[in-house]
Length: 515
Length: 125
Image (tube, each protein chain N blue to C red):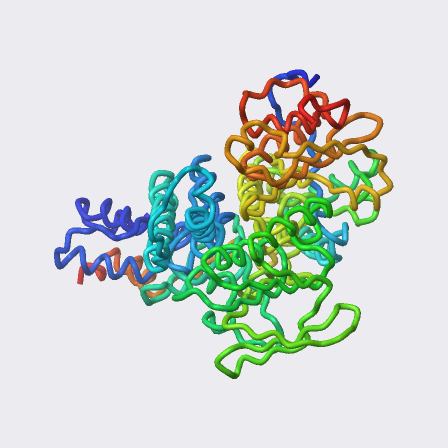
């Protein structure tokens, strides 16, 4: 309409520029005057372009959703405040810890497991600074890779802290200073989680650390106490134990690995980690902590009450779990509530009570796992674009990357007993597997749990070398609704560790050949 | 043995009414979900949709969670084009101000008024 009011040559360019960022207008006195006039007034459409999808959080859930949405042709923006993409997983979680786990394992193996293999090694020294650099290289390579994928898939990456201004608008405090806002027809909240602090201990990431501090210690502590014998505690405890720390794990429950790990598998890995030098105090609670001195003192006693004792540590790793992170998101501005554990409440299609706002990843229901968040990200975008998405919460694997690794999917024996399901069990030890024998790496076993009548696989639990890779086959079998006989009758290459998987399946419906 | 069932396809009928998330510990949606939707459906074309979905729910067998929770349509579950014409029923009138803010009339700015009144001459002044 107003184009008629402008000189013919200037009008088209000036009006186009209104809908584009940055404004590109040749700076003549006339056009600069027009531009300022035009930018002051509102247009008939919204002043800033409305995105099809705005995602708050560039962690695994957020960035995967952004890429998927870009691939589906949506106009998408992703807001991330860390300054690098990938969230906890890539920056301070899964990825850096795996780098340290791998390299500390190599170091430990070179120190303790070479002579019997016929390898004479000279003086072996730890260069912790270099080990950390190697970790940082892996992290920066991967995070930059996501930025590249954003560009490739036309995702707008906004570096800043986002908060709801209203139900369709996110106000962003930019990392580089200044403010902006972005409107979205749909909004995904993917703000992730943070470590749960331990009451009475102040986290300084030096003496009292979370997983974030555990991947960045400047020197190997002489004594380390890990509060919480879950996956994070055991992985990081393993790293520093291998590098020379005297590590003690204090766990409230009667088993390590968390409640999802099968009790038999938990006992097995505890025995192996114990042989590697880690100490465990199960059924024990920390009653008090004092971090005022040079070392940290922890008062502990039996969970059900008992004799108290004091543990002394150079570093205490608090690994009692994680909690959803939604602080500063402006949930009050739009009236979104969380449940008693801080999780945003959603329905089966990830919608909050405000239907165009969906939540994925750690800040809502389900296990706090990166691969679960990825699945949700894809499904949530598909609900937007295809009206249908799919995540099977009964077939999400869990992996603990100690050595040997522990991995499981589906239900464990305790859960089946509680549910009153009749089941049968089949196991196969790696000590009877040819490849494990040749690798001189025979600790562990594969365990199948299947329905007693139908033989359908209900759960698979592995402790052993490469368990984290092997569980993929188990997850596929569970997803397909396979029976143990389906797996047992499938050819597995020889000699491989995967043969132990097949033989455990055979042991469930019949008998294993090699055991 | 597992047999190939054919290419994966999207189910033909999908119930988009809000239901508890499979990993939700309480296995039910809080009341706020229903109240938000009820409020959102008081005006505009979604009001018609609500009536439609209520009548269709009466004829269809309710699902387990739908049986416990009130029926409140499926905002966001259907595309705008499927919602039908944006017209009030006969004898029904809407006030524009009852609609969300983005549907309200935008005010003219002084600059626009001036541009109109001056035939655009003031913009080049």
